[in-house]
Every structure is written in structure tokens, then in C-alpha cells.
Image (cartoon, rainbow, N blue to C red; front, side, top):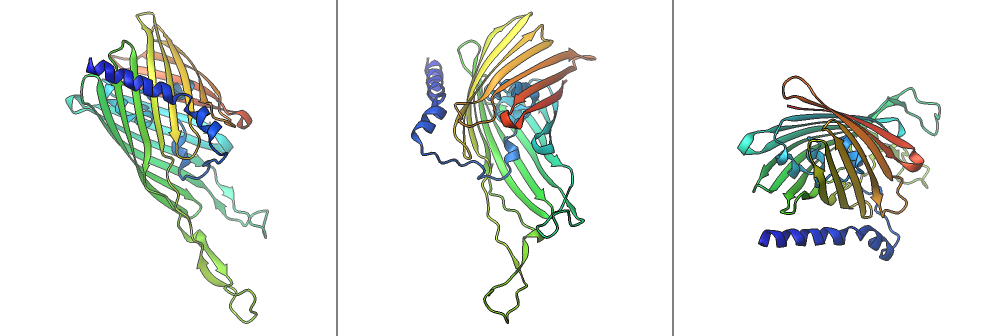
Length: 346
């Protein structure tokens, strides 16, 4: 009885959070925190399956991409798994994600991931030399994470995910550290699961390197001073993109022929307004999957909206399962992004 009362309380809390984005924007001054955090590549969703469902994956989190969405969901995985995600991202950049989960029996589940946002080299240009100085530069973002998840009861699991983050542009570097905390709860109500996650809680990041050096004139009004004194520009420290997510998933039906889920997430980031994600998945004979969703519901002036996708599951030799997933994500004025994922369970 106490367990059911706690579950009802969680559901009511989630329901009250769903319209939070719309209410907050109606009563808040029009002041946005967009663009006020470092390492924003950590906000790029991973796994074509989750993205095709509008990123409403916190309560579902039942494949190796859970290391990103909700580390608490890793404990549900009874098999080892691997997922590789690639996409041609916005502004001619490339986004790649590699994640793996290893079930170690009664000791829980271990997850690892590597995230990379990269670009091709570009020519260095200045006001004096707009056609290029002959030098080239590039920029890249990387994050490595190690997660651990365990079941506290047969219904409740918790997970931690530690990260090392590195950003670089030309000769500038920055390193940071962060932690994700996630929980997953299978409620006593048939087919209903809850998930909560806090991601990217960690240090601030500040770029440093030789590119901060400038030639400074401490007294431009004096004609007798040295106007080319080497100095370093002071760089600011920026917080990581901290995010709080709560989600609910419902398994509408599950039999040998059909399986279907619907999911809803509400999120509260530190660099934007609140929003809601909704998604659904239908699987036929555990082979063909069709998915759809809507991202950034209630978020004004968002370029993200509907999502679509499909997937194929295929049994290979022995008990090895192969997964191929595709997602189409609409980005409004930024056109669209197509993501592909390949996964293996064994």
C-alpha cells in the first residue's frame, strides 16, 4: 500500500511538471540564459531510437544509450550491449557517440561512452588579412564517461556516470569534470515506469592557451611609451549545461506480435526554459520498429519540433542481436538532422 501511495505521488508530481514550461514563460520576464554554458555538445542527444521518439527516453532507457539518458536504467539491461551513433551535425560538423554496457551479474551494470564533436580544418583570417594568413585551425569537443548502475530492489535502480570533458579550438584548451545521477522505478501499475536524471553536474570550464596573448598599449594617449607590451586577455569560466529530467513511460501492449510504448519527459536546463518531450514506439514481431515524437513542446522560439524514425532488429549467430536505427529530426531554419545508430546485444 505504501509503495502504491509513493507511486501515485510521483505520478502527480510528474503531471504537475508537464505544463511547467508554458507557465514559467508566461510569468517570467523575457530573459533567456541561452548561450551561457560551456560544452553544449553534451546536450546533443544520442541514439537514433531515442531521438526518433522526441528524446522522451528518461523512463524507458533500456539500451546502452542509457549511459547518456539515465544511468539508472543501465541496471535493467540483462545482456551486454554496444551502440555506435553517427550524424552530420549542424554547420558542417560531425557528431559521433560510442556507448557500451556490461552486465556483471549481482554486482550491477557498468557503462562506458565516448562522445566527439569534430570539424574540418579552416583557414585563419584576420581583419588585416581577410583572405587568410596561411595558417589553419580546427575545433573539437570530447567527453569520456564511466557509469555504474545497480538495483536496490527488484523495481528500483540507481546509477552514477562520471565524465571527463575536453574542448579545444586552435591552440586553446579546456578540461572539465561532471557527474550524472539517474534513477529508474518500475511502478506497481502494469506497464508504467518512471525515470529521473540530473546530468552534467560538475566543474566550470575556461579556455586557456597562447591565443590569449595580445600586444597592449597601456597608455595610448602617450607618444613616448611602448605600445606593444605582451599581455594576456582574461578568459571567463562557464558552467556546464546542467539539466534535470523526469519522465514516464507506458507499455501499451506487449505480445508475440506487437509491442508499443508511449513516453513523456519534462526537463529543466540551466541554460534555457523548461520544455516537454513526447514520443511513441511500435514494434512488429520484434523486428520492425516505427517511431515518432515531438521535441521542445511549450518552448517558445525553438527550432526543434517533430521527429520520425524506424529501426530493424535482426538475430545473428547464436544469441547476438543486431539493431539498425534511423531518426529524422526537424530543426526549422537549420533544416534537419538525420541520425543513424548501429547496436549489438550479446
